[in-house]
Image 1 (spheres, rainbow, N blue to C red):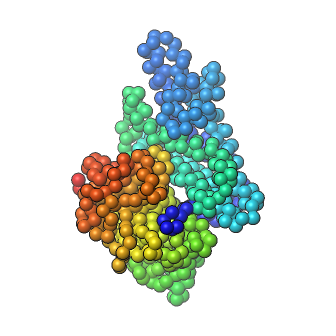
Image 2 (spheres, rainbow, N blue to C red; image 1 turned 45 degrees about the vertical axis):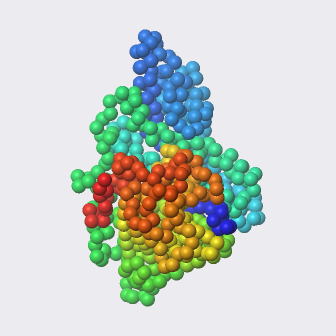
Image 3 (cartoon, helix red, strand yellow; image 1 turned 30 degrees about the vertical axis):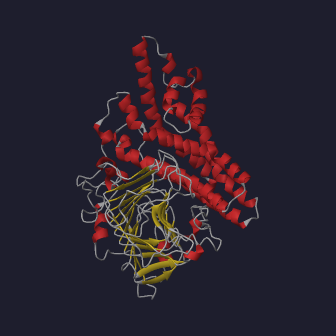
Length: 584
């Protein structure tokens, strides 16, 4: 079954006009890396100093083997990383002989090499594209170019949002740590997307190996930084370092909402007719624009205030992208099935999967309400994305996503879907975001005769990645007659994470529940697939798969880690009537 075993490539599309930004990439990356490591460097300083103090105290000696900046302190810090050899190789030369004793300076110096490699990486795809006449390979390299630039921008924006002036509650709050983990995870996902694009076209192994070689330093740096940030709380606790109360307190309003959600946004989600900045009417009513593209062009870059677009009822055949500069946009329509944004780009017609999306949003803080996003290519066209989102802290409320294979691509960052409808066939909810679906109607539909349905395909690539799919209090039932086997999902990557809980599962589901990515190849034990308190004819777990990474039942404590509050740092960031409280 060629479609079931088809390669998948997911890149990122950014505006071509950002040439000026690319020319500044090297300088920006160095600034970003130096700034980003300040937080981590301060952490290392505390850890290394404590190690030295403990060694002095226990041995009665000078403790030279574990002084700040010494090989012993470097080894302690690198012990939590995935790429220990790379970490040690970067830090040890500067630490040798006590040449650099200030941990912060040590960290900055050791990562300058990484900054240089990142700058070089961002400049390489242009040369790759010029070096080939193969259209498919050029398109894959275009994806690489765009996602590399995007990875740099994600880190740049994360640093711009942080105050790096000292160790205080603002820097080391759990909310700040969660932000940094999210953005580093997204940067890793962006780079992985380049390899996925090459895999999709079955690129020559030599080409793939060369690209991996170019990416090595940058990917390992991001992974190591993510590991250090992920383990900071345990670092401090294990070393018995007093933790200030603010360290463990998220940045929340007094009403329980996290600091990154404004009360005005909650009101917009509930308002019957929010006041728009731009009205879109395909019929050209007075004061409106006729296309959504015209409205998108009016969005100010990186706006800190909400920009509202109202799209009146009608079918809009447009391919749209809200790029990384389009912040804090709300787009609402007249209802699912009334305001429809539609397209038909697809893989069979030689478009890379990631570029098939009818609607793409990357800028942070996007809100959509009462709109249908659609790809009409059909099952015979294989991968055809209706919506692709990399928008951090985004909300989709009362929206529908209509397609077949790969309908909804939750690419990266934190996303929330409430009371939405999602239809599709193969892997129709997929990606590497930290995403929660609540109260949604998830509907597998009839695919081609030689296919079967898989609802999810999650893309977590390493243990520290902030990534996973949580489906809570949803309804899983067929759209029309479905006569083929249907499964809850299949693990796309080695740490794929998917949890289905408190949902109604219809009889269309095969008793085994889940299926391997490759036929008859048991997925690694590193995946985490689980079910919790589901109901319905398809909810029985007695005949489920016997994978080491599958859990037919989990505890209430484990389930609570996949709620809005815990999983996407979204403690009641919508209104009480929109967010479910998990009752365990």
